[in-house]
Length: 155
Image (cartoon, rainbow, N blue to C red; front, side, top):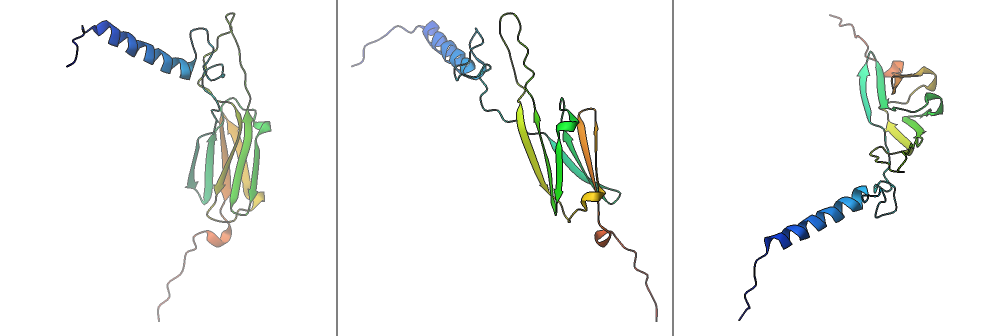
């Protein structure tokens, strides 16, 4: 036979509150800004990878990469056969206030994006433009893959 106990809803709410606090502290850090996993923000090993989009325009492949806050002179672009590689680094620009607290959702570090092109690119026909934090790489299609109009003859 089980003994009757008094139901105390406040206890269950307190347990739930403590569990939620623990979960939030593990992810974002405690009230003093120190994370449970050693990272200043609680986000550890967050790797940044720039967003990429690609499309075809006027017989060219256009690849755009979002690279906000990156010095374009520190971005390396290489073309080798059918491979386009964009690599660089977003450097940490940490600024702390007087309390030493930092809240961060921005990841920093080295990145590399490798894209496979539908044809072998002529490295001399590749251009890159950086404007407003967006890198645009254009790759001209070689003559052999461009559409060619075929004349129809009659007998």
